[in-house]
Image (cartoon, rainbow, N blue to C red; front, side, top):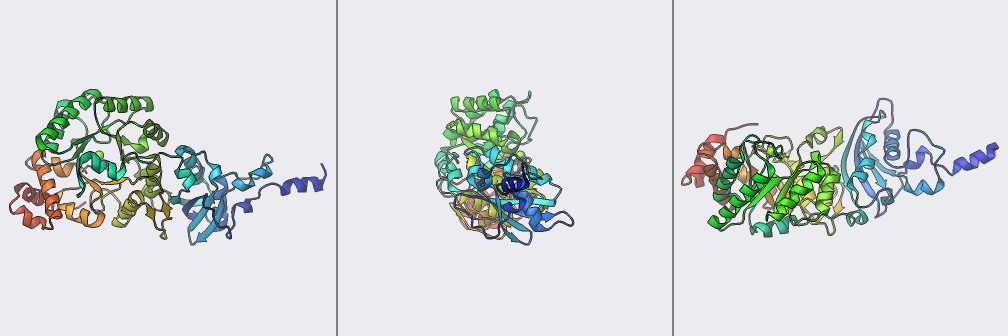
Length: 436
Ligand code: CAP
Ligand code: MG
């Protein structure tokens, strides 16, 4: 082949610079990613950004002979660089519709390990309508959860049965019953309880549902039991089926350790069950502000796949997350339209239902006024230690939680209300000074 021919061929191929076009106007159908990029020493931000775009779409570290001209329209494009913040547009044809792991393998895949970046964080994603439409989204969402529990005008109250591991089944169900009876709407398993020998799934399910029915009859309120179905995928599906067969209405899954593909299988099996998403392990990649994937992105993927309730943090409890971060997360999962900020992209969720935010981790009744003030009423407030640790036990702990909620809803200070509510009084004495 002569030199001119070779040159002609080469012109049909992509160059690294094809992945950077600061004049590019993203199309409605593009998926947009906002990255925070810290290039490696001696590398320009443009070069680093270009490499992120190519590695996460059609390119690799060198031009390859196998490229075809028809692929050019699939290249991701860096279209904005502001300080360390880089926006990249991905044509939606790059992705298989309705395949969450596939999308993540591109936009949150190899790029985090590239030597050309010192640190790289995927801050947010904006999902186009045609990708939104290829997923199920939540089956129940906030309105469905409220309808299920017949609670429309206040936050829902939940508890995690504690100790998190070790209770025998009979005791586990008894603790749940005590909590329901004394004002709690939903009791749930802890993230690391599945079907250990001391508390096996089937028996726990049967006994707890029986106790939930009993509590419903005695209180006249609706009660939910969120049993943890996290397991190997087929086993998880079997467990979910069993919950449906025995008349349960809610399940919980550790969505990160379970995996996005398995979660999709669960959602798309369309059991008549709400899905509570516990996010154990998320902080391994969301906590570092310079590197990894933000919780906002995980929340987007989880809303897309279709969980009904999702942990967002507390701002005041034992686990990391500022009020600003927790509030942004709540907006991301609960609103129909989310506005753009420096750290966040806009999103129109179209027909995808809102996910109810769960605030949990080191909470006690004294936190309720703060939580309602800052996070509003569309939350599930969950108390583990801050309920079962009450000096007078689970029943009193549950009453203290319900009293603190009633006081706040009636606009009365907890201190005032505690004067004639002994359980709340004790809870405040016990925990108001605790610092994390
Ligand atoms: C809370 C909890 C939850 C965390 C999860 C725990 O118990 O059961 O798993 O809230 O964190 O095991 O820590 P306590 P996040 O009420 O006793 O703290 O909501 O941030 O995902
Ligand atoms: Mg837990």
